[in-house]
Structure formats: C-alpha cells, structure tokens
Image (cartoon, rainbow, N blue to C red; front, side, top):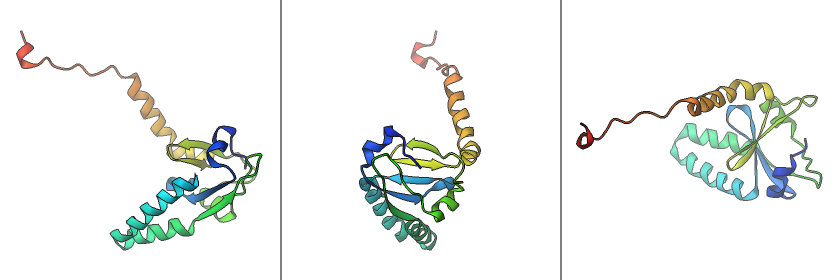
Amino acid sequence: MILPARFRAHFGTQAYLSQYSDRCLALWTSEEFDKQLIEQEQRQEQGRNERNLARVWAQGSTEIDIDRQGRLAIPAYLREFARLEVEHPILVNGALNRVELWNPAEYDIKVKPAEARFADEFDQPPPVQAPHPAEAP
C-alpha cells in the first residue's frame, strides 16, 4: 500500500505495524512504538489475561520499511487479521498517536456509528443552566 503524503514525514523509512483493536492495524513511529512496548510491559504484570494480550500484541507486531514513494508491504498475517484484501482499497485513518489501516467495510461497521453520535452532539443546543439560588427572583 502507499502511505498518504501527509503521514510520510512522521515516519521516515521505517515504522512498526501491529494488530490493533477492532481488527484494524496500527502504524507506529519508532518513538510511539517504544511507548507501546512500555505499556505492554506494564500490562503483562496485571494478570494472566493481560499477559496473554501483551503476548498477542507482541507476536502480531513487526518492523517495516517505507520506501521513498511511501510504499510499504503489509505481511500476510496482518492483512488476514485486519481482513485487508489485495485488490480492494485500504482506508487510512490518522488516530492520535498512530495511523490506522482499515478494511473499509469493518470501519463502516465499527467506527461510522460513533461518527454519527459525535456529529449529533454538535447538533444539540447547549443545555440550559438553572440560575444560581442567589440569582433566582
């Protein structure tokens, strides 16, 4: 896949790719991936389930190369996890400290409903606040 130009400057020639929540992939800069490693190390100390989640995350993460045109190869096991199909487009979404790679159909099911709720919040009039008791007539 080709990483959109607006993200390329953040990554340079190397990045880390990992399985992420909701069956998407997360593309991390080296610095952000190091932070994730620390979080996963802390997580595994919280019990067996968390330790297993940290293991799964670690085994599903890999370092990848990004060429000068922004091209990167997604390993087959990560494409399978995220249900990415070679002949179909990949939805690329900037998300705080990572770039997410989505199967567009998965994104529509898992993220679009939240976008609608978020938009609805802006369509609502602000709540009317009751006057302070000292200000009441």
